[in-house]
Length: 176
Image (cartoon, rainbow, N blue to C red; front, top):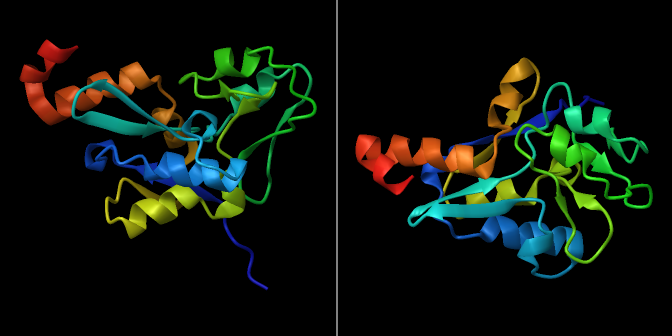
């Protein structure tokens, strides 16, 4: 039996239309209902017309996992995804502080953080994005990416500022 390699979700923010299908499908998969606030992927819009998905970058060194004082976070060896043990999480916020992009966030109704778990190796957000033909998200083999994964671990504001300049050039600075 062939061993499946770990995956990683590549993203091209400039292709995002802001449809939010990724949020919807994520919350349906994890919460059993449409609940974007509980989604592991969230779409941000700091500048009108410039929307993009924000979710865990699955950093090569996993600073969130290292920062957890109660070992509520671990790495799934099969997928490479950060896994939250909801029963152990005390919502201390150390994982959020340790994340360069402050990506983990508190579940809106429960006392634990939510982080993308790659849907067990079959991310629903990627599936719907590809079906909708937006091509914002797609799966790549994680091997060989190394520290490149961390390049996407930025705050939504940092991503937005860079994307605005990318889309509108120097004219975009008016929106920042």
